[in-house]
Image 1 (cartoon, rainbow, N blue to C red):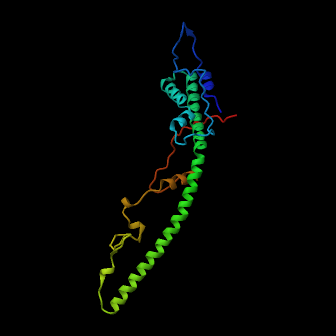
Image 2 (cartoon, one colour):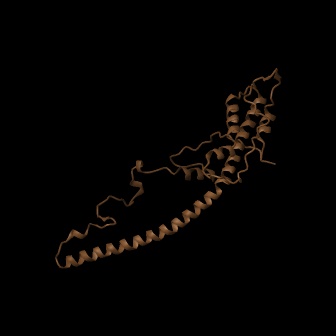
Image 3 (cartoon, rainbow, N blue to C red):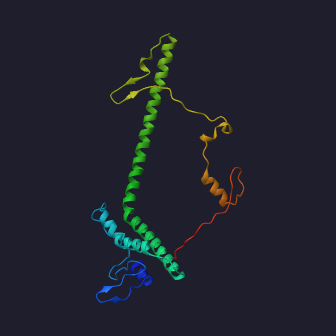
Length: 228
């Protein structure tokens, strides 16, 4: 794991002491050398898997707050400070990345258990939904056949169209739905622009789309150096 304390102090070395006190750093808070900003071992056994305080410790919450404070107090007034600020930003990104990895390691057993639970749930609910569909289909078939036999004998009896039982109720009501006939005739307020498809087309080299202005825009790219 990266020792963020060493990285930060290499970037911003402590200033000389006067008497028993340190001079305040112009660039922000100096992390004490006794503090380690390396991520705690995420593979330790958690006595309580829902202990948020233990998670905060594993994520080095103190060091995170220190870096955030340093960033807020940091000023860029020279080329050198600009590079220092960039390095601090990349350190923040790397810390965030390591926290993400630690989080995945901590939550992985719970996620595997959750996935198994969801898989079992899906298996059972799919079977039950299928059973429900089959049963209701047979009920509706019976109702239709019953109504047909009554009509053949000139008997009108809507009493079984809707009914209640101990487990629920069956009711028929009219609702509005739609069927697409002509997309060109549909008013624009009911149509949605597929921005994801447009961006994918731009990546593939498409430069002309009727109704759209395609232009270049500046986008900054910041990359952190890979770990050695």
